Image 1 (cartoon, helix red, strand yellow):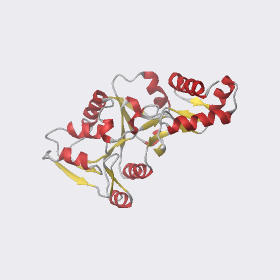
Image 2 (tube, one colour):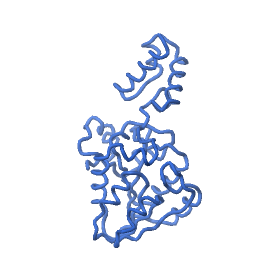
Image 3 (cartoon, helix red, strand yellow):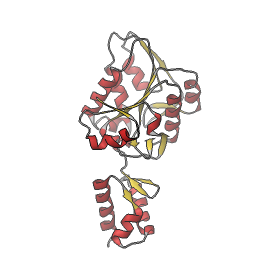
Image 4 (cartoon, helix red, strand yellow):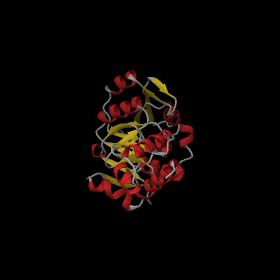
Length: 251
């Protein structure tokens, strides 16, 4: 079997089953696991999958930069942002992540709301600049241009001094076994810091992130209070999270 044929077969299995187990594929094709693992490494290098122990999972389409992500799941992110905004109560201290869904949340906050939003995203802060009732606290640090958020020790230290009511978390991958993941180690560290300082954490989960994985773990899915998904997300996609006791809310 040619290398291109093996890779096509692997990608077909990934599409049909949502994961690839190297040992199973090697048996099916009558090839060594080393050969399959090499193919997985090369496919991962092309951004076509995310390697995990024993095989691979779909790579998250949300791994692009902020500009690229604006064109992914536009309607779904708007619906999730609107639904998340309805969860905010007057007088709360809200931690708001960076990313396109967080921007939608900021846009849909009640014009009469009085609250404080703490964010490490300059883009989110600018979105809220015209909201007279919201006090905006901008966390500083090194600008991670890929996501347009502040990262690093300065950001983590500032976050440690905050006690918030709710954190709206954005990630690039959400998987019942692998957990909540993102594409950068420092960004993952900042998300963990935000999660620690909030009484409640809600994950903003547009459809392309569900069942996908990225290289750096933020937390287990069971560590958060709820996952907010699009209204028409199939129950078969949601079921593994509900089975773990995770609250899943449809937008």
